[in-house]
Image 1 (cartoon, rainbow, N blue to C red):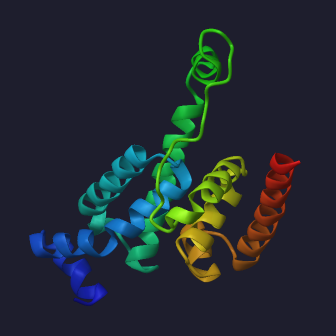
Image 2 (cartoon, rainbow, N blue to C red):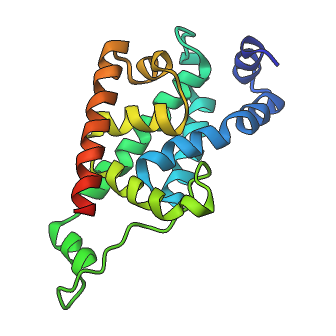
Length: 187
């Protein structure tokens, strides 16, 4: 099924087109969201919301970018919404989660398996994901889309609605920041 046929099928409410869309993109959308929110349940929720939004708003899709780019943009935006809602929780709740009742540190990065990480690299991956979580929002998105989802700089720029030069700059700063974070952890 070509992209044009898929879009037309979705606009016509064709169940087979929607099934094809989900089968084709569910792993990529889930992995993109997982790279940003770093929680499998939240990533699953985001992926479901992306497909619901695509289904509901396919008629507003102008075709100025690829369908996948539009979906990555929705996934990125929704993932950021999840992160923002987490941050907006009351500070006391955060302190409680981080330190528990006796002020002893109890927070650990959630144990999840990103599909791109093999078992023998799981420990290093956990450190990397913890470091990625500390990056500024735009650097985190660019790094996740390019390095974890293997999108080209062009595709990342379209998804983030920015220039390729801006993506290159974000990637450069993300790598520098990750290096600093990881070196600080080792030192």
